[in-house]
Image (tube, rainbow, N blue to C red; front, side):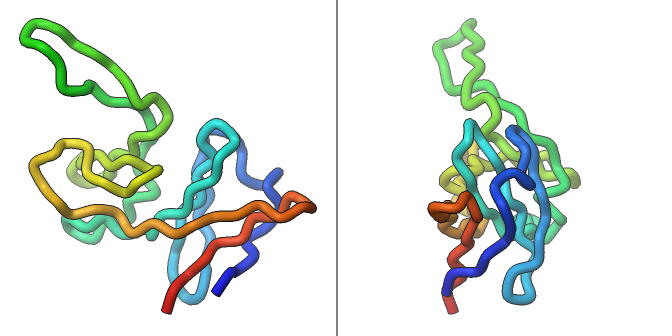
Length: 119
């Protein structure tokens, strides 16, 4: 079922706004004018993950190299700094298969955001 969460203008670029949808806290992220919805629960220890910070991360690379990437897409949990890709929900570290619960977001013709929450 799709739930309206507000006009796109209320979700600034590069920021997260936490809303309640169907009794759940959902963080809505605006990444390069694309919108992503994440359940505000870290799969590691149930922290309010959407209160963490969004940045990039260092990517796997050759020995002696430091390659930074995914700028604006990596959400770090405020408790233990686990990193997750906002777009896919996957853990960035690659050593754990737990992932964030994500929900599809659509933008209506009149620029309102709809989050689809399954049963």
